Amino acid sequence: MTTLSHLECSCCRKSFDPAAGRDQCECGGPLVARYDLAAARQSWSREWLAHAPPTMWRYAPLLPVANPGSIVSLGEGMTPLVRARRLGDALGLKDLWIKDEGVNPASSVEARGFSCVVSNAVERGARALTVSSPPRDGGAFAAYAAAAGLDATVMLHSQGGSLEPGAYGAKLAAGASATCSDGPFFVEGIKTLGLEIAEQFRWELPAAILAPAGPVVTGLEKAFDELEAIGWISSPRPRLPGVEPGALPDVLEAGLEVARTEGIFPSPEGGACLIALRKLLAQGTISAEDRIVVVNPASGLKRAAAYSTRLAGTALTEQDKLGGLITPR
Image (cartoon, rainbow, N blue to C red; front, side):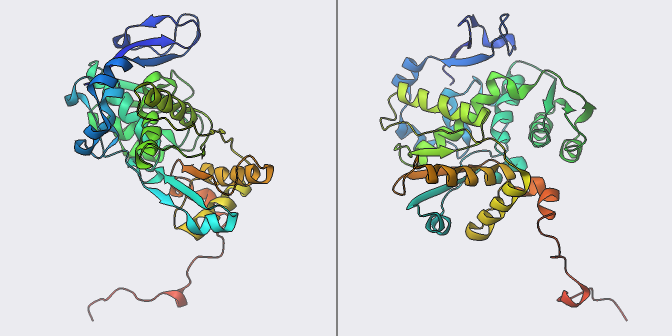
């Protein structure tokens, strides 16, 4: 059902066969997936989505897998878009929303990317995959590789992040390697975040979306490019100020503010987006009337050890216990 036509070098525009399984051009430029958008516009409609599966694969015509039997899905996508009224009131914003990617499989937005990477690998007949991964990515990669029955190797950047990949049966190694998360199909999965936000707002895009810089912002930009090309959106594009990580104590405190006001426990990257939102408000870049979306890319539980440093002294004592074991006399 895909309308994928070719891979294109983002630097020299040279075309490649998608089946080649490569991530880079000879010139060193990263490859980007391109679709026959004219065909998608003629054969696909927004009304079709009423009968589509409630996962990111509802957007199959704009994803790089032709055979539905190759799709490896754990239910990723269609995550909550939550109206953040209390936080909005505190900031003086009338229309603030949080897109909570922490409820995805493996608790992060990377589930989208690796569902797409692994599904494409299955379609190409791959039996093993290797990813060079920051700590948060490895769990999602290993989960989808396990679901597909593929041998998985995670090249860890640091000592952290080994628990989840190991639990899913991935082999662990130190160092860097060719990385799936930099490849074109990872971005295609992440792109569905933007498609979803557009659909959830009934194709009227917000004024701004605050998300971590990198593949998430790249995917959002690509999503809106393609939606415009097939005629599904006409509203002005959102501002996409890619948010860089800040000082850890600051972003943890901001994350706890989100948790305590909205009941969503964000990753530190989600906390960084709140800090960036405050700065943009102070600068006048965002107005109180704008519709704003903050993307929380992962559950705060992915960084439980870091958050525990901000919650010292909350452990229960024996006197706080409400019950215990019932044992035979």
